[in-house]
Length: 209
Figure 1 (tube, rainbow, N blue to C red):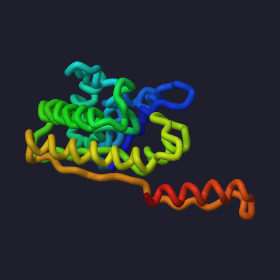
Figure 2: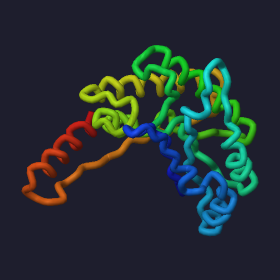
Figure 3: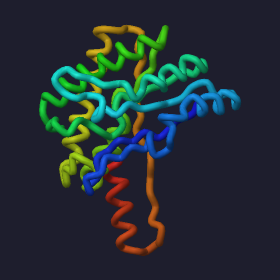
Figure 4: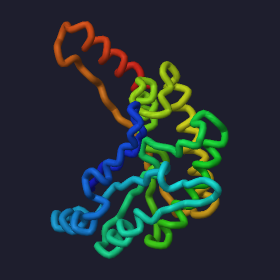
C-alpha cells in the first residue's frame, strides 16, 4: 500500500498548507500510479481537502480530484480516501453543531462522487488522525488554535466522524470505514534537558486522549 501526503491545515501564520501540490502528486498522479503498480502496489491512500471543496450554500467543487480518480480507475489502483486531512472550511465554527451537520452532508457528496469511479466496496477514512489534529490545535500550530482545549476539539472531530458515517450508511451500504490515529511515544532528543523532557511529557500525555 502506498500513500501520498495531502495535509491541508491552516497554520498559525495564516498559510493554508497544500502538500498535495507541494509534492506535485496532484498533477503527476497518473505517473505515480504507474510507478507503484510496477512495484506490485495496487492500493493507495489519498485525501480530500474539505476546506477547499465545500464552498458553502450547497456548492461543492471536486474538480481538482477528478483527474486523480480517473487515473486510479484507468491504472487499476484502489484508492482509500480520507474525507478530511487536518482541515475544515474557515466559515464554520469548529465547535458548533453546524460543523457536524456540514461534515455529514459533505461526506455524502464525497461518496456520490466516488461511486462515479468505483464499484463494489469503497473504503474511506472518516476523519484523519483526530488525536494528532486536536493536539496540533492545542499547541497553537494549526487551526482552530484552541489552546488548552484540544480535548473538546477532539470530541467534536469524533462527533463529525460518526455523523459522516451515519450519513454515508443512509446512501451507500457498501462503504467501509478505516480509522486512523497515531500511536506515538516521544523521548527527549537531549536526555536530562528540562525543555525537551517537558515537551515530550506533554506530547505523550495528550496523544493518549
